[in-house]
Image 1 (tube, rainbow, N blue to C red):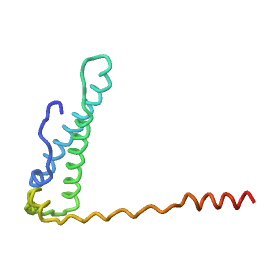
Image 2 (tube, rainbow, N blue to C red):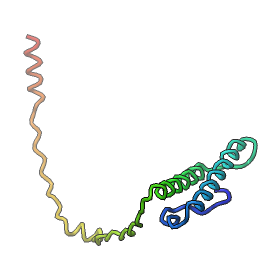
Image 3 (cartoon, rainbow, N blue to C red):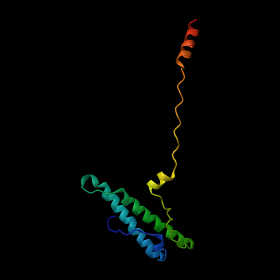
Image 4 (cartoon, one colour):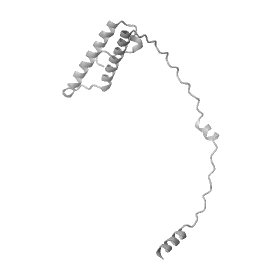
Amino acid sequence: MAQNAERVVASNIRDRNPAELISLRSAKVEELRKLRFKKALEGSQAVTIKSHEFQALRHDIAVLNTVLGEKDRGVTVEAKAPRAPKAKAEKAPKAEKKAAAPKAEKKPKAEKTEKAPAKKAKAKKGEE
């Protein structure tokens, strides 16, 4: 992002008044407009604009629009409790796993039966 590097988070801006949110939204829209203009001129200059910059600005504008819509409708949204990290099960070392798991015994290969003579017999019947 060009000038405004801070991201908009809904839980941080819900306590602001609508006038502040509108001015912040208009600043983000203006920043997005300038970034699009810079992207259009990119071919003639050595400026590289990343697509994630556009995505971040559009996301910020969407969050601002959502919070403004909530304020217009009179909706109160409570902050979600942060998620607790998942407890990871302890893994046994590989050496213990190999020792604990019994290996399957290999079955002896069955003796080959002679199928070739039978095929020859069928071939002989077809000739007769």
